[in-house]
Image (cartoon, rainbow, N blue to C red; front, side, top):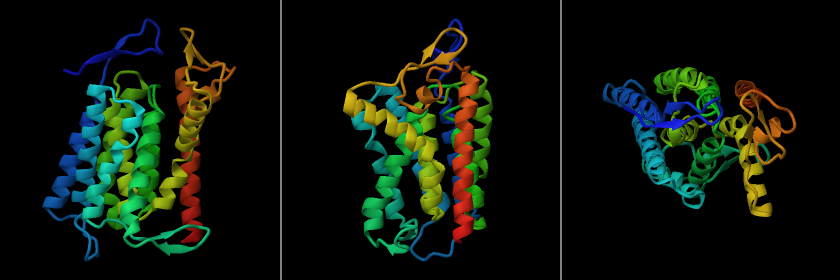
Length: 289
């Protein structure tokens, strides 16, 4: 049913079904539309549509953009700007609070600029950084599941229902992905990344989201700096048993630099880093609340 691609980090490179992220998109969207249909998530905001409807539309956008990338293998110069279009439903439905805590200047009301600049920037950064941290079994599902769980804990109880099924589906896919049975593809990574960004905006916990994804930001910074300054790309080698690298151009190559590790060891280390940043985000939120 699903196209199969070789798993380059397994002996003999077995073929694995790809594009299973579509299951995440369909299950999450159907669930959110049901929440909207029965009006099960109520938010006291006169200028906001149903957050369930908004999040469903955003995930659909994300799934379509990821599917487009899977089909056309888009260049990064184009792919980097695609998530900006997801700002349209968030801006149209007036989701999010225009007043944001900056930690340095206190709370700042960005007004209309919140919808014109802040939301597109958040969507572009979160979606692209999540999409860039991949290539190993589990990275595209386990790490986002940790952040999703952290966002659920850090948001108001009235928003919790929005993440029940998306989180459950993401964890289920993570189980099979970590075992090397499936790949979620760009369809999954785009949709999950946009879920993180959109939920952070809808639930007004953008700062918690930003701290949670710091390992993602570090990974993308290493990749982009090396590419633009030295025109070099990150590349991890596989000797049939372990991963290793002779450079530090991404989070994966930084961890495996002159230190051979199995794929699962590498994924666990990165997952622990994401768990630590997410825990720090929740701690900062609770201390400042």
